[in-house]
Image (cartoon, rainbow, N blue to C red):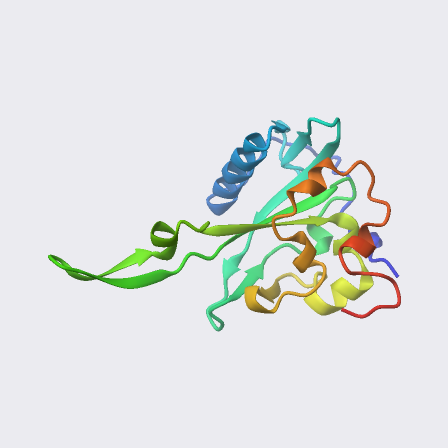
Length: 195
């Protein structure tokens, strides 16, 4: 059973609005990542639910909505997402979710003493992760039930990921996918299987 009926219809009252703060930062990082992969990124003049149209080298065109997760105060590896499926338009192909998870570690420097430094500066690992979720995975009944995609704020833990987030993590190949047929299987959401 699908929850596609909960998606937002195409807006009729278009105006020139835009995201603020973390939204703009997430969008800038998304553009940078797409361009590093050789994709073209187009930004609509009116931000009414579609942040970008991405055109790939193999001719695929995807509409993308970008959002950022915020750390959950109660769990070290937990994140909240303020994006229920009711705020995603029916014509969005992919929800791109940025999760900043860099942690501060204490380092003892000879002349200075103890200082806190972002782990990514020491290890060279990325300070964030991207989750690219196809709309069909977001509206899938099993995913909605597990992650509570229908609620105004849904939650997940990086150390306890389940489908569809396991398949969505750093899945940049989704932008080049010509058809979304069989996407439920790729994202671990076969009908009859519980997440």
